[in-house]
Length: 355
Image (cartoon, rainbow, N blue to C red; front, side):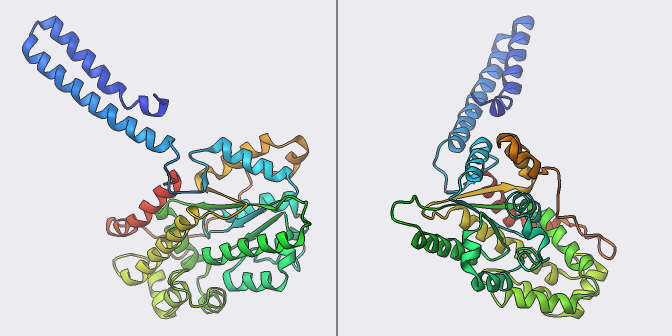
């Protein structure tokens, strides 16, 4: 039996032994045998349930086609390490906002494209940001982006899949008939929904505080009007700047429920699309997903797996995405708000387990 499941049976077994000893000591066979039989039956029931749960997690009967770091850390590390050593393999990151995307970008760009960390013409200060703006840069020079060993996109899942499909076609047409096809590894990360929502609120209400007109123009240009894919970002958060300012100044859920519910909805829409991505299969493409909590462990294990010449490039403990300050709004979650986020939590659990 797996170690992580065995400990759940041990308390019941210990209790059964204890009752058995009492039965022998006090010589009350009938009452204690009834109790012992009841405990034994409960233990068997629990054992059957746990074995079914273990079988579900250990078999390949999963809806997800992505490799999840939580379930298969060694396999994920080997896949990405093989990518590093294969000249015809391309890493395409999907940067999910507030989910350690900058950390992953920095580590892989530092290894393969250090020029893009310093040259604003190639790698703008905005990095992979964002959506329509990022896609404009991609469309202006598709071959450069598709040939790159590492590339990153803060775009919708539909846009991301479009890039992968198009790059595969472009590179397939470019290679000679005797060459092996180019391969792609798509990586995306996610985060426990409550912490992501709070981080997003702090960015809106603190980092962008007093600069909402600029933020609105920037965000609406980037996102466009895509409520089906991106959630109510432009048309929601920034639709009424007076309401936005009031909500951030008061900074409590009860007084501006309608506004904060739109922030919750953004995470639900994002995670719905990430779950769809995790279940997508593309030719010559492997998807890898991981919780933000696992990013440092993933980078550390990858660093120790790669040959020595690559170690100087990795800085596994360097985190580029610092949390926003809380000068104006330090948002506190209420039980009502957490209940509304629960449907995003269900998606999160499916992403973690790969189901």
